Image (tube, rainbow, N blue to C red; front, side, top):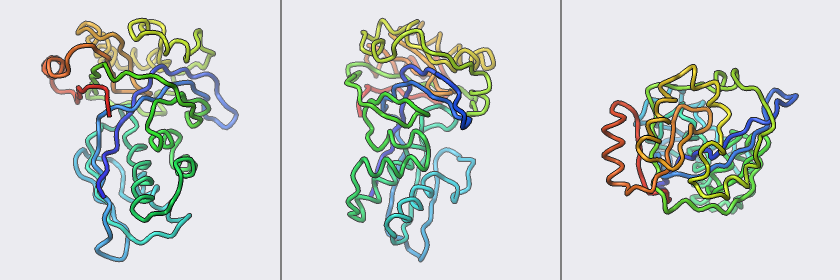
Length: 277
């Protein structure tokens, strides 16, 4: 079985409050985007489950990879035969794009189909929550308002399929620890849902990512990407999650924009595509 786990972007990200358990309550919208890894699951050649990772280097031993955690979580509920898993990493790490979470969620979906386990999306989402806060989103893989620690989801009817997305990941990564160190939680000035239902052209200045306030001064190269995307004609641009990737939403034809993005951000990881899955 071959699957193609896709990335996500955050449309708005409000860090509302610090919880007594040390986590933070958030408000954001997760939107799926067509930057994909490749995941293959096949019956094992041997007696144990294995994971082989190719593509981008991943600084994580296989046994700690979220894909293996997903296999073990599902195996604990319904004992599984061993499998060999092959993961080709294409989505950049340390980017705020959720690549690792997507890989884990798609592993759950793939195993559920492969062995006809019969779990519903809701049941898989519960298992995904034990792996990572945003993993459940990729079970549904449709635009979702996320609250709590980013694990409580409400569907939102928002369609950006007429737009082209450009994502740029500069040669810098931002750790979750660094991102939260500069955060000062506060209630948002505007209602996120209402803002998202406005035309995209109205989002600039109204739809904010709270992490930008501290990340941009610490990493001016990330801030520069956002400004350059606006110079290139983006209707809206923002950092995704806690960074370091920045995305822009354009009305420009994707083929024309791809050339321009490639020239402008030479040396960065980039993706340009119509915003459809």
